[in-house]
Image (cartoon, rainbow, N blue to C red; front, side, top):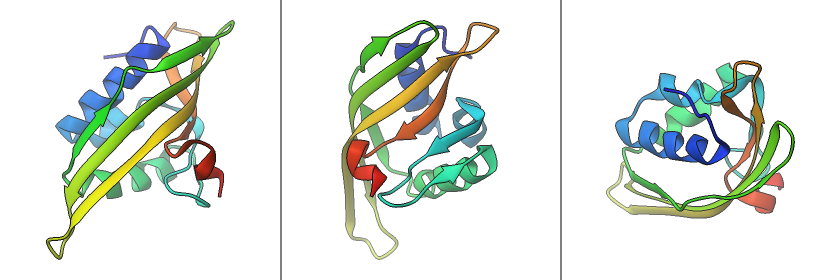
Length: 127
């Protein structure tokens, strides 16, 4: 399962998140990718990204992402997509997260597309 287009990368992310497949989610990132899991925080590299994504998966919520808008150059793409995550907290309270992701994806030598930078909260994620 690999993304042959930048758009497919977003589809795979949604599918893997819905399936709760942490290994498959992490595999969508370059080795030294950067994820901004919340404003002001940065996870660099697959080990740190794994820990951040595991926390979101632990919420066992419903994740949805709109089809991305893509600006594509030679082997690199900028993706924008709206997303929501609805879950229930440990205390039974509703958790409703939403944002517009701003991502940079890069085509790998084997033709797959992987995330190089993932900012789920867009510019707000920069903190």
